[in-house]
Length: 87
Image (cartoon, rainbow, N blue to C red; front, side, top):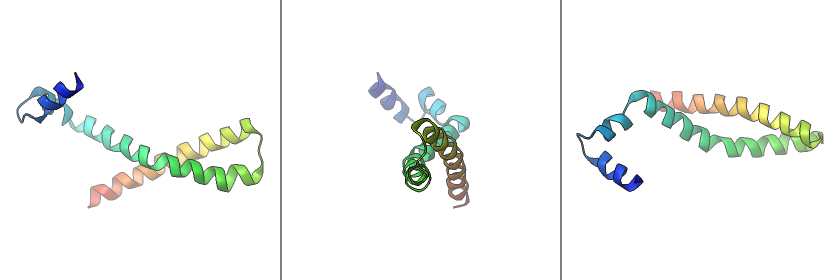
C-alpha cells in the first residue's frame, strides 16, 4: 500500500502529490525531522553534564532530563528551521 502511494505521489498531477505538498504538512515534516536530528545529542549532553554529576535519584534525574531536553530540543529545532529559511 505504501509503495502504491509513493508511485502515485510521483505523478505530477496526482491528488496524493498535492496533499503531500500542502504547506502545513510540509512544515510539520520539516519540524519533526529537525526534532529527530537534535534530540539524541541533547539527551546525551544533559545526562553527561547535568544528571550524572549531580547524582540525582532516578526519578528526579529523569524529570530533569525530560524537562531540560524538551525545552532545548524545541529551541534548537526552531533555530534550525529559521537558519534553513534564511538560506
